[in-house]
Image: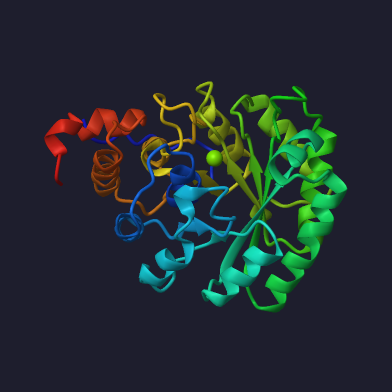
Length: 316
Ligand code: MG
């Protein structure tokens, strides 16, 4: 059986947007650096599968993330299809300069909900983080660029362990007050569970945040990503992040981060009767192709179940 039995569940959105993060969040966490032309083909294939938001690359300093050092060259190679968003991650004002020069129309900034991760990832405390992002978001919006605000470590932090929901809500509100069009709630270490998801979304709603402003970014590190996704869908969230083939979550690499695989998400949505507009067979073929380029099998359960032996796909 190559499709789940379709049994719609009550109280779910009719349609969901999948925000594909494989080319950026996925590849930046893979041990292998992929050539620019392979990345461009990967992105074109993802769009051909029906994905309408594909985070393409990052304008972080090349020495910090060598896997994405070719951001300008890649954007020059990507044929931007009408109706498709190709957001890029912008870490700071210099990154925004590079994004605007490249003709980017959608950016994402990456903030932390916790002081410790802000210091480790951005070398800034929380107050300094907001001070840095404020002019970036303002200038992007003045240029007509849509801005997504990621908030990371929303369900736990490796150094601070428990992250209070009130603290996460304050961080999310800061991003929206800066002018972000979308707030992406990130479970960066994958520790959250479904009740926690609902409690956080409820807490955001009491402060005036609406479902249409939210996206969820779950990691499958502890096997909770799909359960958490169902909780978010039931709550009314209609944008869900995922990484084709589970890129960035390779179980054989030290950099394993456990991104939810797009194929696993599409299988769930198909079974629930929630429309996502994605061709699952084409997506599996794309991830098998990329796994061959990376020299290791996809960690996605659905890719493994539908994709067959990766060795038989060599050269496809
Ligand atoms: Mg991720």
